[in-house]
Length: 494
Image 1 (cartoon, rainbow, N blue to C red):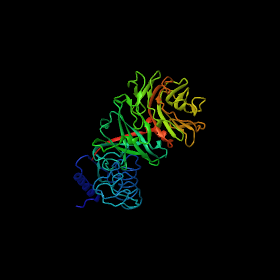
Image 2: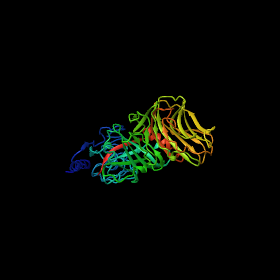
Image 3: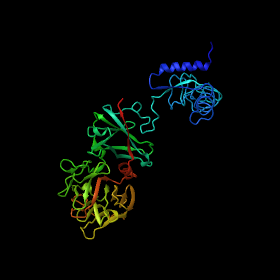
Image 4: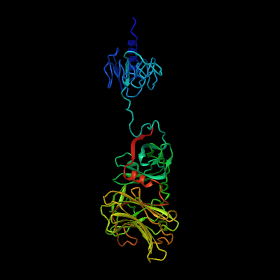
């Protein structure tokens, strides 16, 4: 007895699908004469947009107009190919033939037992309905951070590590600017699987496999911060890194994160001796300088922890190292995060280093911010006081980044930045006078610790040699305060 070709194909498709599908599959029986149930958005008869059983526009089973087996109108498959389908996928086609038209297809990719090759253009009537197998166990298309970069695709760079997480930076934070040797703050919440491995050895790589220096900072109860030194390409549409953990880490050098800084302090909890270490390793550690300064001043920081100052007598003292000075011929940049709800009454110092009317300051001044240089070659007889003071709201109990570049080598001025934006430039700095010599550097008070106390919190003070590259501070604000850095899903080593 001769059976219609469509019935043979239908039965054969069901038999083949049964053999190939052992779990996680579903079966759909489509109509045979263009009377199938309309699919979402369909125009006409059939499952899909058009006449016939399928998912496309036209007659028959297919995903377009025309005859053909291929990327056509079978039962939709969510974008995944069904088994045993010989048809390849075309983009869009019209005309007769096997192609991306109205043949027996699989809803956007090839369907089972189809055998048809893709034709460039096809139209006309396709075959009637078939039984199409859909794999219900396949995951949906990835709309998340790790699209195309799962463990089976992206190389595993750290053999000794068992897990990793992808770190991403919002590319709009760069605005097309490339930066080199940038310390990127990656915050790891307590609930994140990587948190328990902070301090046990982590490794960071760029997505293409370049090892990045890394510093791990565990902060009890508030998560952790991992600093990754990296180069940033302003043209990269999706800047990212792999952070590996849970295993035997490669030898890494945390100091390399900060080796182009003259000084850097995290202001996390103090060490066993009560000092806050200079992670750049070049300057004497900072110590609390009032009788009650015992670590209780610890508070939440812009990243990790910070130090709260009471505005009465809390202050910090560093060494007298002349690296901290701005001598003739120097250009150096100081920066510090601060937070306060109090408008200064006169001057309230964030940092101050001065000796015999020679030195530098970074401070709040009434309703504004100030950076100054005092350089007198003859003691304190009317010393040249060069400053830039700009009124800007700051007493909102939010974190703000204040930065000053003291230039005594090229532009001969002071440039003041607030939250990453240049807000003021001073008059010319006199090219005479010594630096502050053997005076100590103090935070939250004047140079000798006798007044002008700052009330609020400070975090992450840093000193760099030279001026900052363009958008350096703007990226710090985006990454450290505004949440431009995010974590993807944790992946296990395959």
